[in-house]
Length: 232
Image (cartoon, rainbow, N blue to C red):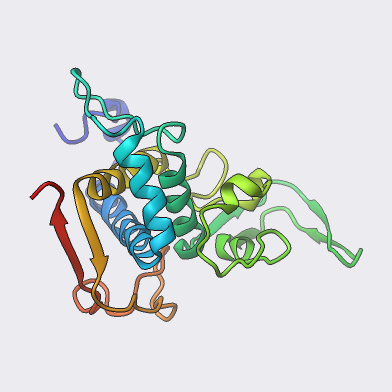
């Protein structure tokens, strides 16, 4: 039963249209954003020899070297793969461009940086964009630069980084994505020697749906990779 995770009493209240929307979300969520974010993570690592060398050192000589263990477990928590995880966080910071919508439940006074006060009235719809924060030069030094080291050098507040939105309505798949992407990245760079054959394409900001894809996505990015399994 594909709907087993949802209590039966809740499903009984869904009409066919709502069930179809739910099923679409299950297919959309693990592909629409996870795939391009994995692509950007791999591409940026391959595009910079210094970053690639740090990732290779971490996954080939650290805890991940002999994974999985006897129980089939892969060490892919942030503490296990700190630099690889930082690469993923940079990709999410640069290329997630979601809009978060919230219904205003009460009047909210807001003070701007210039000292002016405004009121967001109750029952309004408030929308905020993560990328405006992620590209704020007052928050991130050289915000357009892919630099994983910033996650070890800079201090940030929770509101400075929210590729999955914030609060109880944030992306329910965020924890899975933050395990999947570093794990796949670690497996690739542990088991293969690889290099970019073509220049990395530009980001396609004209066609954004929650995340920014490379120009030509998905089949015509014209960005080939040469790779060979290590030991062969």
